[in-house]
Image 1 (cartoon, rainbow, N blue to C red):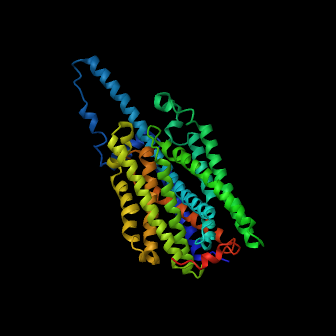
Image 2: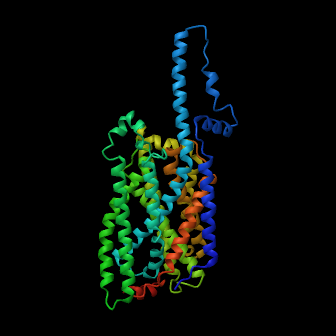
Image 3: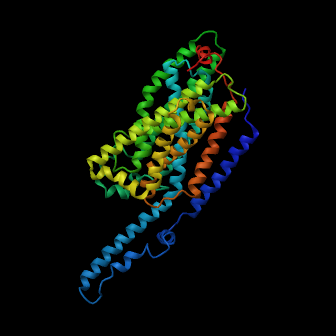
Length: 447
């Protein structure tokens, strides 16, 4: 049985405490009035730049008095709208930081669950030695999805402005969103979220239960049940994962859509989940556990990390190229915003998620070197966090982004929570699925 090391537990709890303080700072530092928001932006731009338009629009007071007054009223109204918009963006920053981190770590658990279900449904012979690692990671799925659901519900109660389609005033003046209200309305939205969460966690609970029961069984009936359950779950998953990506990510910008988006989000969570499986397996081996897991198992995980990174890049390029080439204004604005306002994270993500894994993991021998897998894995995890960051932030905070204390705090908080829950889950069952009928094949696996 695995024992949760005291040092790792202290590290996880330290991350949680530090992260909580960072998130609290973000909420406390957020402006509460338009004036505070404008002052914060003016300070950030060394003053003057935020107010440059005021003098530029000055008009003579003696000539054309009525026209001047009308122009002044229009400009004042526009200024008020801009001020409110700026306030909402800055107030969204701590919420968006928490949402990005919460969503990212939930997606790691969900991607791992999909990979686990595929192994079960395919009756793969190489992976049973890693089943308990996968089950440990998916132990985070329930708390992770519940946290995301709470954030969605708080948005529905108008405690933030992350989802503009939830704001009745915005909807009243936006015909495009009005045409989507039969789907994008808070009650139906939360009901769908509950369906996703119940389905995913229901499968995880039953599959884990069958897996443990198989250890004590004298036949393979629980293995067969797991096979049937996993095959059915994958059909449910591929539909609900796509809908989740539309609801929880794409609807932050309800004016934009992509028919490829569900697959794109899936590739991101899938490679993140596989990467975490590899990192935790290597960590456990370094502590003297998983002694039957050999270099060939790690090599296979490295192949998946490499292959899905290429698949993610294919989807990214397909989405980017088709939208950019067609140059339809309501579609291309998605990438223009990210290239102009998020230039560094947008292109850094591409390097971290494609070029770096390509160079490191292309060599077959490197996939057997734990150092290279760990190095590539850390970059992939950070790269896909930035990927989720790029999906959320431009629509939530506009150009008022910065990876500062709230963002780092949220990442540390959920990282600590993830580590604590996952490694605590690993202590609840033997690290070897002793009753699995393919365990012998897994032990003898050689690439």
